[in-house]
Image 1 (cartoon, chains in turn red, cyan, brown):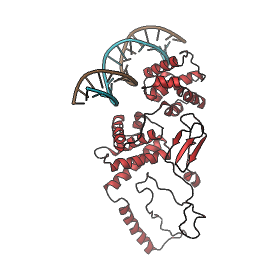
Image 2: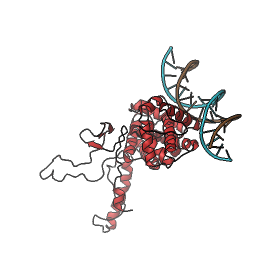
Image 3: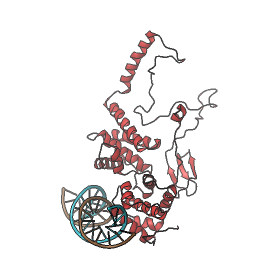
Image 4: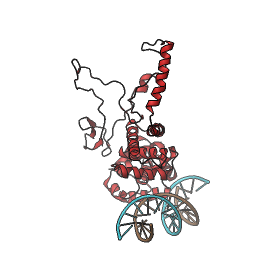
Length: 317
DNA sequence: AAGACGAAAGTGGTTGA
DNA sequence: TCAACAACTTTCGTCTT
């Protein structure tokens, strides 16, 4: 892999959760991404990567590109502290003298001691390491990692880590970040990657949401569909059909008060059937982390709401 | 034999007094 | 704090393909 590939930021095209449109627009004044078709705000608090047009001295303002990486919450010092290279070379690449090498060795030691200055910093270094690992295994985008790291810092400031494991609070922060970014993962799914169990993550998550007053809303079935389809190796048209059915008013009405994963699982099961890519209830249940009974119940309710033939469902909406 | 079906009892979280 | 409640799970016998 080339160095360029390494640095290239992977940004997924934003998709509207409301109408499924990819026709979106970034508004840097308000820091929002909006759907052009239906006006839904898809993402808020986006970062403006553009030039800085302020002028501080003569001659500036013509080339005010920002240099170096931006500040990030995923590094304990936000990536803003000084780095001293481990190679004993000067800027042109030639070796430095033995005397200077000694000076730099001592500087590096001092630097290490100043970067991690107290127990809170040490905690943060360890926690953000765990956060990177967890987010990496889950394949989360940078925006959710940042949000997770930000929430973790807030949790530390609010004294919510005391008496709980770092892993648990990190997992709960990730869960909260996913929910805020409308990309919900179940506690079970996260628990699979974390040393902490579902119950502890859930408890900590509720605590964090309450104490930090995070605007977390109940997750929606749509958020689970892409992952369930991927796990079951179902084609994009099946995923699209599932999303269309989920947005049907009759389905929304009959889903009220029900677990979103069960709804998503039933609709995915149904769409696989419609497109002749049948999956068994057990397969879908396993992918969604619900039981076959739940899928059956939701499936029956949705069929009834859409007036479908249960043994041969079809949909034109 | 595998998958689907549905009844009945058990479990864990939420709500409201 | 506790009981009531709804959603979901577990278990199991039966039916269908």
